[in-house]
Length: 320
Image (cartoon, rainbow, N blue to C red; front, side, top):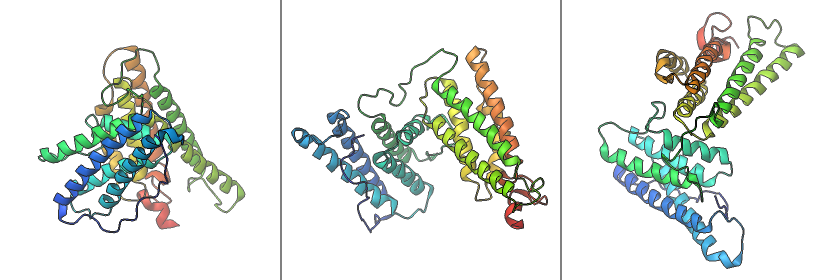
């Protein structure tokens, strides 16, 4: 994406007034502005310099981008009262991230979220019984998908092709994620309270640093999975599991982590691919390994395990 101006969000101080109706109007204006920004950036065809001869085009991008960020700033100040408010702000945050980030992986992640929105139960954006709201969301996510695709990119919503090779970019990234999960489990096992005799000794500090590094490495692998191209149905199922792991980690600070894990395990078969092809069999093997590692992770103190005295997920905090 062309970046010509500072990414600072305009200093709006007033949220939209008039309740949900006003928020919808502001959101509709945001979608229209995003479409215009996409068109303006495509006119530049990926150029990000400052050639005076192209000043009219770069100026159009800057102006369109300003309008998008202005709408985002107002919407994100609105009060979250209902699920629809939260949904509008969630998509608004995705738009702002896509427009301001300089990280290609974040844009790719958003592109994949747009593509997977109707295929996964993990990303809930629609509101049953509210067809008008769902239609607005569809238009917004279609516009966001087009923007995230970027100039000259034909991988927009629903345009992914089918491949028959043994590994895709997604399956390679997912395989590396499995390795990162296994490495994290081994690193965490060294600092479990039932085996760590002296938490003040240098060896424990080294092990703690190793566990933190392993967690960071696994989070990086999750991002790679979520940003990988979705070129076949098996890729979409692996993407779901990557998103599930990220969602599980996001719940580490509250009491919903264990419940979310229980749901994942209860519906494990729902996430598994079906079929008899070599690609499908290999994908199921990776999925089965994922759930095995997930169970091992959740037995650790930091992921809901028994803690220092059988106190459950928050035993370590209570005993600290």
